[in-house]
Image 1: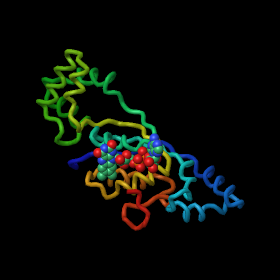
Image 2: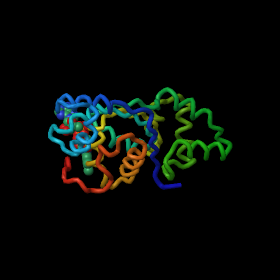
Image 3: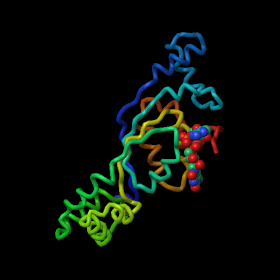
Length: 201
Ligand SMILES: Cc1cc2nc3c(=O)[nH]c(=O)nc-3n(C[C@H](O)[C@H](O)[C@H](O)COP(=O)(O)OP(=O)(O)OC[C@H]3O[C@@H](n4cnc5c(N)ncnc54)[C@H](O)[C@@H]3O)c2cc1C
């Protein structure tokens, strides 16, 4: 297994036809002719690629919370996450702490490799036994994997790719790679390589 973990699954995607219709209004032409125009404008910021705001994607992403902390700085998007308040205590108490296989299975399913030892899990488990939700949250390693549904426009995704494709945290490159592989219109987004002149930072 890799030393880091991130998994992206596309749940839904919408808005391409509507975005092209909007472009057609702007050009006073038929929507069908806008495919090529969209590709030309997608890389031009400064107002020319506003149609990307009409294209929305919903991605289900499982990643460690230290990565989510960075992802949260992208404000023009919406997220719905797994709860660490309501469900985690019950899940912790379901572990058979006397059974190493049960402990290892919980760690493998819920933490990035190397971020939670059996001793750390026992420490968190004891807080769960006390129903002490604050202690559980305090003790939870940053490598705890959380799944969130991340809804954003192609415009936000474009901004993210330009900012993060060369980021030191490998999760970003992997997130971009996996996202581009599942999107319907990767041709409207920057690639992983730095071939475009326009940068946002
Ligand atoms: C190497 C690196 C280090 C960083 N370190 C830190 C850090 O230490 N702390 C930290 O907080 N962030 C940090 N950031 C995050 C950075 O400041 C951005 O917030 C983040 O990358 C999201 O980019 P954005 O604001 O362009 O995206 P979005 O939040 O998606 O915004 C997109 C666009 O909308 C505009 N916008 C968004 N909200 C508003 C608003 N309320 N009013 C007006 N315009 C708005 C933005 O200016 C931007 O043009 C770091 C980023 C990088 C790449």
